[in-house]
Image (cartoon, rainbow, N blue to C red; front, side):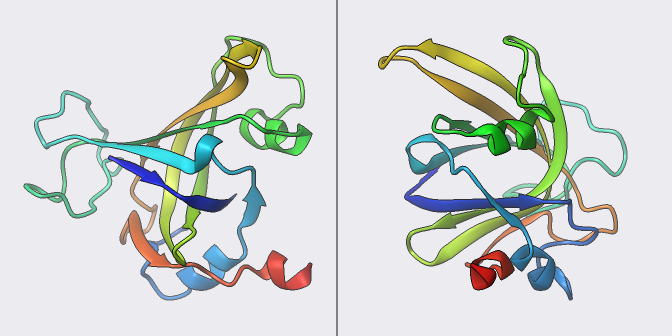
Length: 172
């Protein structure tokens, strides 16, 4: 499934509890704006509980699934094409990432749609790498693949929400 028509993306430290728990809206509003996904879209790969991907106890996120709320895997993927040094630092921890190297991180993400709604993830474990080349048909991009993880203290791992009034936007 693809979500297109994104206008912005915000990220920051993982939320301790789910995106619908008390205090989550304040934490989500404090996230920092980062470069949005290439062509304004992300892809969801949510598998059925028969997934062959194994999770350690407490790592499989317990969001609602059609058949079983505690099993299956949930993956979110996106590419970033128009990026700056801050974006490189965010995904790779450096402004000079090595080509072909995989970098990992764990963050909360909110993807904001032009419709005024957003989809929030309390905790994504992502891997990122540089892909593509220096030409117009295959531009240099950051390829990101993220697994949805359960919040450390429980709750909804992800949920559609009304787009937050970000505190950084209010300061600008």
